[in-house]
Image (cartoon, rainbow, N blue to C red; front, side, top):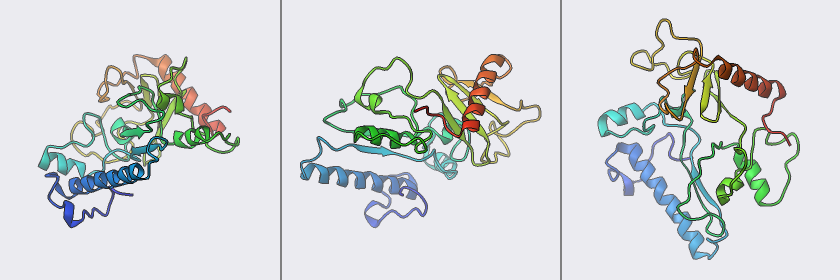
Amino acid sequence: PAPHTPVLPTEQFQGKSEAGRYGDFVLQVDDTVGQIMATVERLNISTDTLIIVTSDNGPERYMLARKEEYNHASNHHFRGMKRDAWDGGHRIPFIASWPAKIRPGSQSQETICLTDLMATAAEIVGLSLPEDAGEDSYSILPALLGKKTDQPIREATVHHSVNGDFAIRQGNWKLILCQGSGGNNYETGPNAIQVGNPPIQLYNLDEDMSEQRNLWDQHPEIVGNLTHLLERYRASDHSVNR
């Protein structure tokens, strides 16, 4: 569960990161992952072992203080943080090591989601998921193996904020069905809801990764298509067809 609250770096790592106690805690987690990998090597099973390091959401709100005090922005240039519908709340690291299958240093541009780990694990071990399991889980094994596919692995990806507001991404387009973050309350600054803000947001993430230019009124056909797709997912209670 680390790094998460309570932030409890052990004495060995306190003050070592130069990014506060949370930075020290992240450093400790990195060392823990290193111990796991070293053990796998010692047991001579590293070649056939898949190790994934990832996170469950974007940075917590105390990132703002860390950015001010240590000039470290955990959300990089993405907008928002944990609980928000913006990408700062959903973009996360995903690092996979599997020497027998994954080419070292390779990267993939596929959009994936943590829900995909269930279908991926099932395919790896040769099992089929029942119809009522992993309703939103796509196997990302082709991406891990570096295989080219005719279509994106995911038809679309649904986002959800802590306040219950939905967003959906397909290709480079992302539709957010609320005015602001959908989560954290930004009373001032560029993330605060202003008078006259449109009721929805549409961003071209290829051209505007920081979600600053709302194009909802310029592309009504995209707004309609993404809204219809999201409504179909919600009505059917799943987004994967098996």
